[in-house]
Length: 494
Image 1 (cartoon, one colour):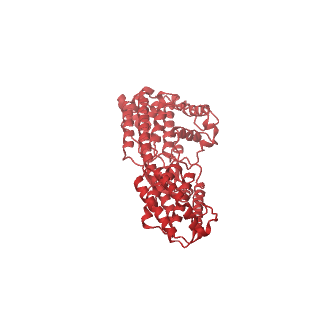
Image 2 (cartoon, helix red, strand yellow):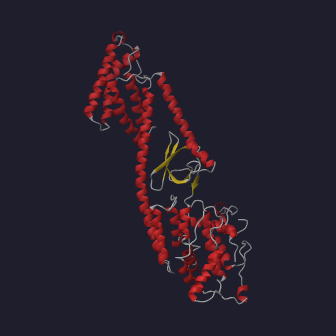
């Protein structure tokens, strides 16, 4: 019998199948599996040779059909539980003992026969694969327990269908992979998705005898569940995106307004024009075109001109700009506000107030236009240096945010799942990266239902990744990964 602890307890010394080209070769894998199960001599494996001495000693072995019957009897009653932190979660000796007892009960005889080497090694190999499942940190504890319920059906499939280990499209393998994929965001067993998957597994256990149709049925149900969950979660995540981006847009607009109105005179009657109507226009432009767009820059520049036009006249340049540019500025502001579908009567009323204030500023000025008829001015050069400084600071802040985002590892992408650090003495959360706010260097994470859970600053998250407080979850084929780990453990030096 194989010493299973070398395979079950730890894979820290197991070669990485990602970096070993042999472990991606189907022929190489098939040969390694055959050598292990049949005990064929091969200098590249440490699998023991066939124990032909068993037959010479006159031992009797159970017929495979009897083993299948006993496994069918056990698959509803024999349960292994995953215990986090426990080195060995699969006890093959204990399972084989339970199997022999089950066969004795079926035959109503004492346990005098044993399992032949090929069947025994087939059981060992399946258990080694499940042991690799349990060591895979990408699978949550809840899903590991669900997978453990399929150990016996997997053993039966391996005995009934010699393509189970060799065909990566085998429905039984896809059932295991789909459960892991569906459950990537599940932290516990108290949610509807987990319970639904549990019912599918239960149905498989109740119906699977020797016909692979039970696995096909389970796979159909899991694929249907995957489609339903994706549609539902995509819909909720879209709503979450809309809420987050809307809140972000409000923050961007508010910040811009604060920059542009700092230390400025705003007549009380004109404040709604800026804080209500124009801010709505800015929200629309940001949401549709983004902050780097010409559309956004246009409404910000008009905002600057609008605010500047409202200040008390203190220079000839300002006086002349107001005198000759007021009408075109008012018309341009009106045209932009009309595009927002806001109340046109209210817009016209407040625009008329703007024209009145412009005229009031001109009338109150001490400058005489007749003395400056030959004056030439640049309509774009109306922003005082103090305002330019504020804009420069904002640009520097945005550049810093982009630089912080650039420090993220290349595998930190939208749609990728992570175990995210939530604070000392608090459990990690399995969350998906849903949005990256580049101008603020913020990452937004959602749960498997598409609901926002938390935000992380890019610098903070990089530090957590480097300290292994947070980590990426690989959404891979758990069966192929486990198979590679097992083969790598069987072949020394690989």
